[in-house]
Image (tube, rainbow, N blue to C red; front, side):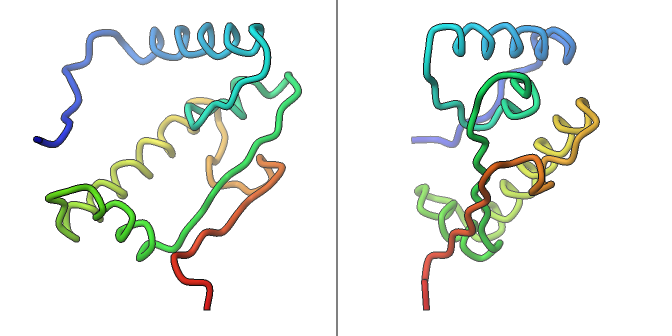
Length: 115
């Protein structure tokens, strides 16, 4: 099984955010929902919610990413870097810092070993 690669861009960033807003708003109108990522804490800031962020040291994130078959340490590190950059870019569009703990009700630090 090969690695997933993104398809070419089929619409611009403005279209993406417009559709994202519509989708997230529609989900909340249906009732309770768990939304992972997508800047939901920024998009839905005026709706009742519990915003949770889970953080982990880079080493733990690399180990977790390496559980995917055929991922080297170097590839895991690069995937994490790209993911972090994309999150930062997305939150910059809303003039926010995705890593700011004050934007979350709860921040959980995860480590693989608790000793």
